[in-house]
Length: 333
Ligand SMILES: [Zn+2]
Image 1: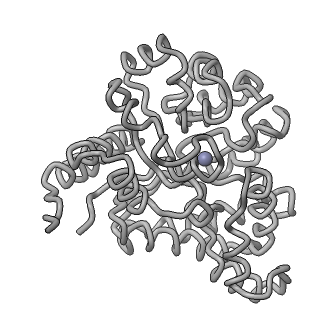
Image 2: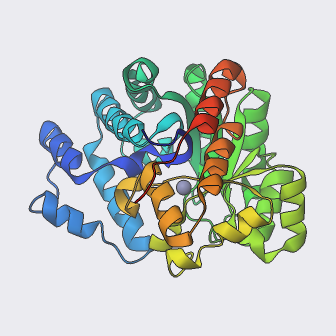
Image 3: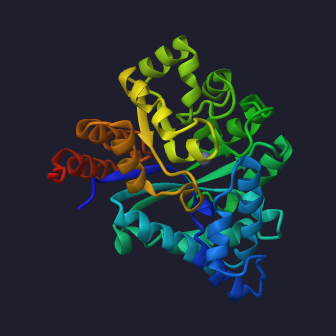
């Protein structure tokens, strides 16, 4: 039995494995410029952010119908469950789909086909978080929120993702204010490739309750002090940071220092099909490579449930936290 954990930083479009990409391409009559799954898997070994983003958007072409989105989410949930995920807060990028003529309803209702029965089918409770692409305009974000209005019973919160530098959080002040007024929870990517000030701005201007990534806070001791004091959760993605070169190697990752500083850290898989591992793989990697103790792993798992948006189901949060505390790590010879 793996350690129970919540996944709080996961882009559903980033869970598309080559096998499913080919299956959906065949179903929808889309031709992929790769000979087979092996050739596509080879392409997943991209070298930088731009080649990742190119591939990421290219492959979205296979997602066309509600059933495609349902199959994508169901495949992720099955894999996550096998690695101990008991609760998943899932990002989706409606603007990337709208740009291809796929409407909000197809995406949300499709994902919901899988999410709505995930607890009974996989033992994984879920929440859905709509992300705005920060390299698109503020007006486009407002239109996107408007398009989501009929589906807000399915959507717990909003987030902000994609290329960070040059797109400070303040650009999205208005849409975050409107979302707050609609009762939506707020998170944002900040301090991944962007400077520590973006983290401060996300907190002060956008009112975010969690910071996605946030690892560059370590450049600003006063900010670290604030994040510790205010118990602001950070959703770190160590394997993603290596693949996108935020750190040189996993061994260089600041996670141990961040835990030492008292930050409320969680570890997550971001875009696992592309970045080489799901939630359990990530826990294994930080244990093996960063030498985190079993009690630190338990702390990360505990933090993931404490930082989750389970306020409407405190009973589930209590149950999951109890599983974390009761977990016995396997004895290694
Ligand atoms: Zn992300």
